[in-house]
Length: 448
Image 1: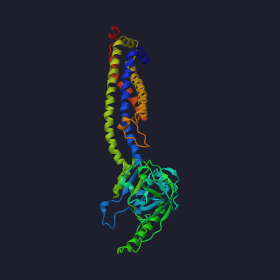
Image 2: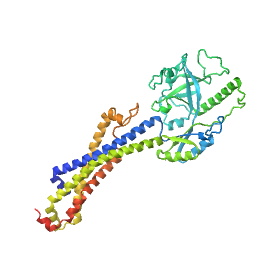
Image 3: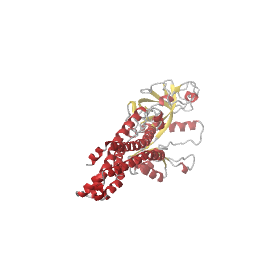
Image 4: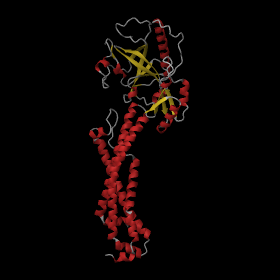
């Protein structure tokens, strides 16, 4: 009966539904702009690192002396690993060393890492292969590390002379190169002075190159942890001999074989648990930072923008609710006699109320469904044709390898929109329904 009543007044019903369509579509699209901002932000941050990673450093406020800087010990690493929801603790062993490939040279940073850690951290290969943890003299290059090399014979690194250019082409293909590394900073120079301590270069093979989509890995080399430990011990021996050769009376007589860390990465199993784990690490006396902290601040700002946009759309739906109310009140005036007859023949008052509520709810439901379909179409068109233009720049600066969205509509928003528009319709029809329920049967029958 409700459907028949709506169909009898097609034009009025269609115009009322159109108001709901505009209101629902406006809310969805306005909110989708805010969701797009959040998605673009998260995608950009993923290029800088995993948001489930916590970076941990020693507390430098506890510096006792310059000879004994604070560090993270193996015992500290074990304590971090025991924290609930911590998937893996990755201590960072690294050294800076001179590297020569053919006619090119650079001072590079080599980080010791396990194969498991590389996979967990999302260090994906662009070409080549990964190493196994027991391999020696093999190395994986960052995606753009080759561009740091300069031709031997230059007075200085020519990169510093002409300025940093992130898009600069590498002077050679680094994959499968035989690289010589040395603790002597002057190694490879043509007219280098005779070193106080001679050291033989170490040959390593570049077996893989990482994908360039992660900025944090682009300008570094990676080797198995045990291989880096051996290099660090050799470097300590070389620096100690060099100190003795230069007359340093404080040179150590015995080289320490213990390893401590200046930086540790903690991988949390669930992004939602990052804040809790971060707080526990800080309570242990370490300095810690996660990108979720910065993300939270920016998201708070975006949520404010989203509320404003949603409020603008809500005004349209409020106007549509007034239209539904008006339609239902007019329907009562037109159907007063019909309501009176229904009461006389024994129709329950609650049934009459339900009939009007169902009609109002159907207007909201149908308008909500159509509004969703139209908003999905507009969202598709915005992402298809607007993400690379002015609109795309407004909602996130496009980056290479990162998709920029103008509009993002999550599935839950569609479901909530249908329910919300139906409820708005029923609420808008509530007072007209009560009015119809209270009409006197006799006076209603007399109405022409």
